[in-house]
Image (cartoon, rainbow, N blue to C red; front, top):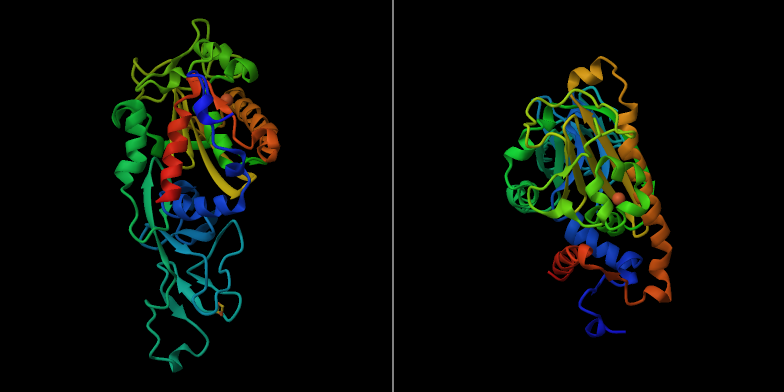
Length: 373
Ligand code: FES
Ligand SMILES: [Fe+2]
């Protein structure tokens, strides 16, 4: 069957090789993850100067840390001497400098080379020139976003623009004051699936009635299989008998004060390409960051963010967290069930998208344009 022989109800997905081929994954690393804005740390995880985290962004290891002047810095995690990986840990804290474990070249929190054995006898070495390689950093919504591009794309257009495109205006997300919320729970999922399967899954609700019994109880309109969440500014309404966005529809936590009546009792889902999902409900925000590690492996870090007093007073968020934790598991199970089929001859030409999934075709077109650029 060729694309031209499809009935009008159906459009093609990408073919299976797009989810398995290391060459295509390498191209995505170069043209997408290393070229765009890639969300890494929660700013509050780098509260003090010297606290750091390391992330794989595309093919590179990136070191994100809090500098002495209070700003967040990003560097390639590579020693300028002979290339040893500088920080091996996923997170940690240094007192005043990063010291390479190989020959002890030492870099300040601003990335400058500050010391090295016999450095004083080599006065011709410029300490800025031989400092760590900077990456571009932006902070928004209490998260740190990095771009490895020499000239990064517009953050306003790519990141903030994605939110505006979905919600209608930026005030709709500002109301949640996400930068002031605190992490009540963080769960990391190691998903044996290509990152695009996870994005595609998040973009449609055709599967909601089948695999998300708890979610469709709370959001009855999701049970009809339409992608209602993709109408601009539309938030799926809680069921009439539902008290809060919890696993049993029972009462949630304190409502975020900026959330007005029009956004109360509603759920909004936003995809920020290439690797962020933001879910807004009246009393919390669920923030997903995906780290594509291999063609068939994606690590997903998911934060549940609440008002500071909810977290600090130790209120029980278990039933609140449990709803989307189950949704995550249900979705990731579906993605893992799909991944092996990507290398089957049955999927050599890909699968098909029904009308309520057709907007996923725009994601594929967007990606194809990036890869052919
Ligand atoms: S490689 Fe880092 S000091 Fe030599
Ligand atoms: Fe889902």
